[in-house]
Image 1 (cartoon, rainbow, N blue to C red):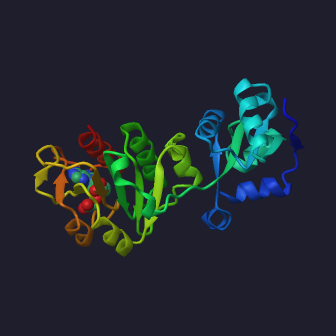
Image 2: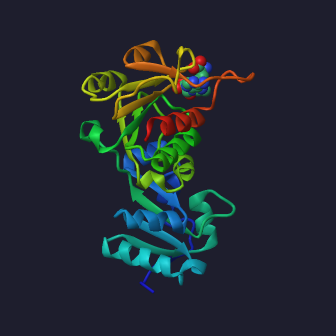
Image 3: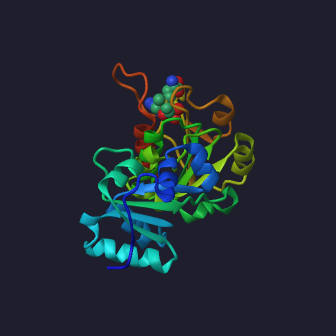
Length: 264
Ligand SMILES: C[S@@+](CC[C@H](N)C(=O)[O-])C[C@H]1O[C@@H](n2cnc3c(N)ncnc32)[C@H](O)[C@@H]1O
């Protein structure tokens, strides 16, 4: 086993700094985030993203995958900490914590670095508020084969612990960009394919519209939907038929339906 520093004190500075990553202010100041679970941390390492700090419990220490992850972490200059159950609980703020936790650098893609033709569809989210929705959309974008997710305006933090949990590891596989509204509107003018607004008030059924790849799918805020300024910036606005008494679909569900319609 690669040598790791044993830590049992809940007052340890690294433990306290890791726990502080539950707060957005601390994530923004440090540019770091917390990912939980051996499978997810191992997937990150496979994608070339090694943790700055790897926490693991004694019970995970002999696992061959953990050993591989620990070797990669040490080789990349990361820190290895073998910690008590209490420390895992404190860092994860969970009573039944995962036995492996990793602290990673955040990796936003600059908007200008997005290459539309690198994928058949991209998703833009207007002021998404719910971290669970955001994480589920990142996971769904990964599953469906979208290029990435662009966060427009004031959005939930994709690197919050709750959002990262909901991505189930896809946070490492999907490009995430962010843009202020005006910046997005200016950038969108050079989009080479169809910009598609998903709106309850649209009159065109999403299955009846013609789309030109690469598509840029625009989804609205959970409470307010897509504002007129963004709806007007789309080449086509479409709706998913609502047949029962529900007046709308959950944002992540609507995004999933649209993504599978737009991707070949
Ligand atoms: C919960 S809905 C927003 C509901 C909001 N009260 C409204 O009036 O738009 C969140 C987002 O999911 C998408 N959405 C939900 N149901 C939809 C549907 N039936 N057709 C198209 N988009 C839908 C839209 O992008 C919407 O902005």
